Image (cartoon, rainbow, N blue to C red; front, side, top):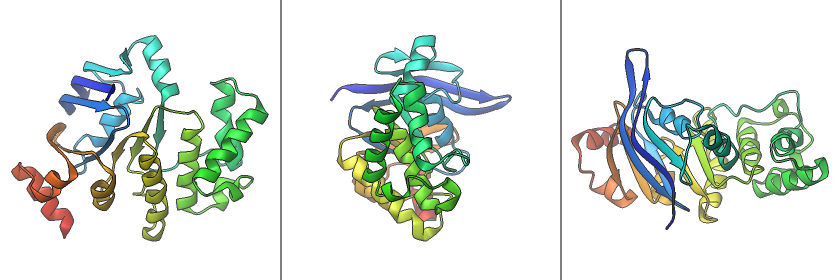
Length: 243
């Protein structure tokens, strides 16, 4: 398959704290990667570096062979890479429909009619089209996160990044978001997902990447990762989350 993302010897530092060190990762088109690990291991920073929300300090990151640190590459990655955050990040004063049409109109140059038609298509795709004219505050957390996914899809991204998309949700709302993400995966979307939802990782991931202390400790298929982890640190992590 065609490579769509490559990270080579990527490092990131906050003052004296080395958040990422020597990260090497290649992602093929259509591949589903789940990134897991303990808190503070650098998981969220890693995917934020891919779309330049958090510029890396060393090494190179390319998306479709474009260096994301270049001016052109940085602009392109914002258009081609969708991001779904832990806390929704919807505009509270806009309706669901307006949240989904804003970027396509301003960045892609779509007319309002075309942007609304597209937005309704994606809102229906994530099973929330009936809420299009409500404000985010009128929706449940699970519904707001599905709106956030639809909003990202409205830019027709080639890659979707998910930063712990279910961690801010009540337990009964987690399933509805994971169901939507599973549907996207089955449709062939390239996805990198930081999550502690190990059932989702087993079901959907092509590879699981385990991080600790800013480094990739182990990369494996879900079967290998969960049933035959190679590293002691991985085994300790899996033992903790199984309890």
